[in-house]
Image (cartoon, rainbow, N blue to C red):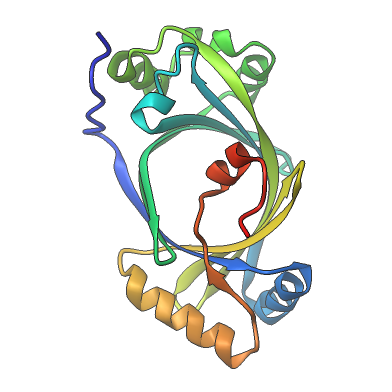
Length: 212
Protein backbone atom coordinates (compact mmCIF):
# COMPACT_ATOMS: atom_id res chain seq x y z
CA UNK A 1 0.00 0.00 0.00
CA UNK A 2 1.26 3.48 -0.84
CA UNK A 3 2.05 5.48 2.25
CA UNK A 4 0.29 8.85 2.52
CA UNK A 5 2.56 11.81 1.95
CA UNK A 6 3.07 14.02 5.00
CA UNK A 7 5.22 16.84 3.59
CA UNK A 8 6.43 17.57 7.10
CA UNK A 9 9.61 19.23 5.84
CA UNK A 10 8.04 21.29 3.08
CA UNK A 11 7.45 24.99 2.93
CA UNK A 12 4.11 26.49 2.03
CA UNK A 13 4.65 28.76 -0.96
CA UNK A 14 2.08 31.56 -1.10
CA UNK A 15 1.98 33.70 -4.24
CA UNK A 16 -0.18 36.34 -5.84
CA UNK A 17 -0.83 35.29 -9.45
CA UNK A 18 -2.31 37.74 -11.96
CA UNK A 19 -2.78 37.00 -15.64
CA UNK A 20 -2.08 39.56 -18.37
CA UNK A 21 -4.32 39.21 -21.44
CA UNK A 22 -1.79 39.58 -24.24
CA UNK A 23 1.70 40.50 -25.42
CA UNK A 24 1.05 44.28 -25.55
CA UNK A 25 0.02 44.31 -21.87
CA UNK A 26 3.10 42.27 -21.01
CA UNK A 27 5.39 44.64 -22.91
CA UNK A 28 3.75 47.71 -21.38
CA UNK A 29 4.26 46.33 -17.89
CA UNK A 30 7.91 45.46 -18.58
CA UNK A 31 8.46 49.00 -19.82
CA UNK A 32 6.97 50.46 -16.62
CA UNK A 33 9.06 48.11 -14.48
CA UNK A 34 12.31 48.53 -16.42
CA UNK A 35 13.91 50.76 -13.72
CA UNK A 36 13.33 47.95 -11.21
CA UNK A 37 14.59 45.01 -13.30
CA UNK A 38 17.12 42.85 -11.45
CA UNK A 39 17.60 39.87 -13.76
CA UNK A 40 16.02 37.75 -16.48
CA UNK A 41 15.82 33.95 -16.29
CA UNK A 42 15.32 31.66 -19.27
CA UNK A 43 13.77 28.54 -17.79
CA UNK A 44 13.02 25.06 -19.14
CA UNK A 45 10.47 23.21 -17.03
CA UNK A 46 9.98 19.46 -17.37
CA UNK A 47 7.54 17.45 -15.24
CA UNK A 48 7.41 13.85 -14.05
CA UNK A 49 4.94 11.48 -12.46
CA UNK A 50 5.42 8.08 -10.90
CA UNK A 51 5.22 5.24 -13.39
CA UNK A 52 1.98 4.13 -11.70
CA UNK A 53 0.66 7.71 -11.26
CA UNK A 54 1.76 7.71 -7.62
CA UNK A 55 2.29 11.49 -7.63
CA UNK A 56 -0.72 12.71 -9.61
CA UNK A 57 -3.03 10.42 -7.61
CA UNK A 58 -1.88 12.28 -4.48
CA UNK A 59 -2.10 15.77 -6.05
CA UNK A 60 1.66 16.08 -6.44
CA UNK A 61 4.14 16.57 -9.28
CA UNK A 62 7.91 16.53 -9.69
CA UNK A 63 9.63 19.23 -11.76
CA UNK A 64 13.12 19.73 -13.11
CA UNK A 65 13.82 23.39 -13.91
CA UNK A 66 16.88 24.38 -15.91
CA UNK A 67 18.24 27.94 -15.99
CA UNK A 68 19.92 28.01 -19.38
CA UNK A 69 21.14 31.57 -19.78
CA UNK A 70 23.75 31.70 -17.03
CA UNK A 71 27.44 31.00 -17.52
CA UNK A 72 26.95 28.44 -14.75
CA UNK A 73 23.78 26.51 -15.70
CA UNK A 74 21.51 25.49 -12.84
CA UNK A 75 19.06 22.64 -12.39
CA UNK A 76 16.49 22.63 -9.58
CA UNK A 77 14.45 19.57 -8.63
CA UNK A 78 11.14 20.53 -7.05
CA UNK A 79 8.29 18.57 -5.49
CA UNK A 80 4.94 20.36 -5.36
CA UNK A 81 1.73 19.09 -3.75
CA UNK A 82 -1.79 20.05 -2.76
CA UNK A 83 -1.94 23.22 -4.83
CA UNK A 84 -4.89 25.56 -4.28
CA UNK A 85 -5.46 28.66 -6.43
CA UNK A 86 -8.32 30.98 -5.50
CA UNK A 87 -8.94 34.71 -5.98
CA UNK A 88 -5.54 35.16 -7.59
CA UNK A 89 -3.64 33.67 -4.63
CA UNK A 90 -1.82 30.34 -4.92
CA UNK A 91 -0.91 28.12 -1.97
CA UNK A 92 1.18 25.01 -2.59
CA UNK A 93 3.43 22.77 -0.51
CA UNK A 94 6.90 22.87 -2.06
CA UNK A 95 10.28 21.27 -1.47
CA UNK A 96 13.26 21.86 -3.77
CA UNK A 97 17.02 21.59 -4.06
CA UNK A 98 19.75 22.12 -6.65
CA UNK A 99 21.19 19.14 -8.52
CA UNK A 100 24.02 18.75 -11.04
CA UNK A 101 22.73 20.01 -14.43
CA UNK A 102 24.46 17.13 -16.23
CA UNK A 103 22.61 14.65 -14.04
CA UNK A 104 19.38 16.52 -14.69
CA UNK A 105 19.89 16.35 -18.45
CA UNK A 106 20.52 12.62 -18.26
CA UNK A 107 17.21 12.26 -16.42
CA UNK A 108 15.43 14.13 -19.20
CA UNK A 109 16.63 11.50 -21.64
CA UNK A 110 15.81 8.61 -19.31
CA UNK A 111 13.39 9.47 -16.46
CA UNK A 112 14.14 6.17 -14.70
CA UNK A 113 17.58 7.60 -13.85
CA UNK A 114 15.80 9.81 -11.31
CA UNK A 115 15.63 6.67 -9.15
CA UNK A 116 19.43 6.69 -8.87
CA UNK A 117 20.02 10.39 -8.08
CA UNK A 118 21.37 11.16 -4.60
CA UNK A 119 18.83 13.82 -3.66
CA UNK A 120 16.91 14.60 -0.49
CA UNK A 121 13.84 15.62 -2.50
CA UNK A 122 13.90 12.50 -4.64
CA UNK A 123 14.30 10.32 -1.55
CA UNK A 124 11.12 11.92 -0.21
CA UNK A 125 9.34 11.24 -3.49
CA UNK A 126 10.24 7.56 -3.27
CA UNK A 127 9.70 7.09 0.47
CA UNK A 128 6.63 9.24 1.11
CA UNK A 129 4.77 8.72 -2.16
CA UNK A 130 5.84 5.17 -2.86
CA UNK A 131 7.24 5.96 -6.30
CA UNK A 132 8.94 2.93 -7.88
CA UNK A 133 9.77 4.54 -11.24
CA UNK A 134 9.29 7.76 -13.19
CA UNK A 135 7.71 8.82 -16.48
CA UNK A 136 8.23 12.15 -18.22
CA UNK A 137 5.20 14.35 -18.87
CA UNK A 138 6.87 16.99 -21.05
CA UNK A 139 6.94 20.68 -20.24
CA UNK A 140 7.35 24.24 -21.41
CA UNK A 141 9.73 27.20 -21.52
CA UNK A 142 9.38 30.42 -19.56
CA UNK A 143 11.14 33.78 -19.68
CA UNK A 144 10.99 35.39 -16.24
CA UNK A 145 11.84 39.04 -15.61
CA UNK A 146 12.51 39.61 -11.91
CA UNK A 147 11.84 43.12 -10.60
CA UNK A 148 12.35 44.55 -7.11
CA UNK A 149 9.44 46.97 -6.83
CA UNK A 150 7.93 48.78 -3.86
CA UNK A 151 9.43 46.35 -1.34
CA UNK A 152 8.32 43.17 -3.11
CA UNK A 153 9.70 40.93 -5.87
CA UNK A 154 7.58 40.81 -9.01
CA UNK A 155 8.19 37.97 -11.47
CA UNK A 156 6.83 38.80 -14.91
CA UNK A 157 6.49 35.63 -16.96
CA UNK A 158 6.14 34.85 -20.65
CA UNK A 159 5.28 31.15 -20.92
CA UNK A 160 5.74 29.34 -24.23
CA UNK A 161 3.40 26.38 -24.63
CA UNK A 162 3.04 24.37 -27.83
CA UNK A 163 -0.55 25.63 -28.01
CA UNK A 164 0.01 29.32 -27.22
CA UNK A 165 1.66 31.90 -24.98
CA UNK A 166 0.65 32.89 -21.46
CA UNK A 167 1.57 36.11 -19.64
CA UNK A 168 1.50 36.18 -15.86
CA UNK A 169 2.79 38.13 -12.87
CA UNK A 170 3.73 36.34 -9.66
CA UNK A 171 4.67 37.74 -6.28
CA UNK A 172 5.52 35.57 -3.29
CA UNK A 173 4.37 37.08 -0.01
CA UNK A 174 3.25 36.22 3.50
CA UNK A 175 0.64 38.99 3.11
CA UNK A 176 -0.90 38.06 -0.25
CA UNK A 177 -4.11 40.06 0.11
CA UNK A 178 -2.27 43.29 0.94
CA UNK A 179 0.31 42.78 -1.81
CA UNK A 180 -2.37 41.86 -4.34
CA UNK A 181 -4.20 45.10 -3.61
CA UNK A 182 -0.97 47.08 -4.03
CA UNK A 183 -0.23 45.44 -7.41
CA UNK A 184 -3.80 45.87 -8.62
CA UNK A 185 -3.70 49.58 -7.74
CA UNK A 186 -0.47 49.96 -9.74
CA UNK A 187 -1.98 48.12 -12.71
CA UNK A 188 -5.18 50.19 -12.63
CA UNK A 189 -3.36 53.51 -12.36
CA UNK A 190 -1.19 52.60 -15.36
CA UNK A 191 -3.88 51.09 -17.57
CA UNK A 192 -2.56 47.52 -17.37
CA UNK A 193 -5.29 44.98 -18.11
CA UNK A 194 -5.26 41.92 -15.87
CA UNK A 195 -7.35 39.21 -14.25
CA UNK A 196 -6.90 36.69 -11.46
CA UNK A 197 -5.06 33.58 -12.60
CA UNK A 198 -7.43 30.61 -12.43
CA UNK A 199 -5.04 27.74 -13.23
CA UNK A 200 -1.40 27.01 -12.48
CA UNK A 201 1.07 26.89 -15.35
CA UNK A 202 1.33 23.12 -14.91
CA UNK A 203 -2.47 22.67 -14.92
CA UNK A 204 -2.68 24.68 -18.15
CA UNK A 205 0.06 22.52 -19.67
CA UNK A 206 -1.82 19.36 -18.75
CA UNK A 207 -5.10 20.76 -20.08
CA UNK A 208 -3.44 21.46 -23.44
CA UNK A 209 -5.11 24.84 -23.92
CA UNK A 210 -5.05 28.34 -22.49
CA UNK A 211 -7.81 29.34 -20.02
CA UNK A 212 -10.65 31.22 -21.67
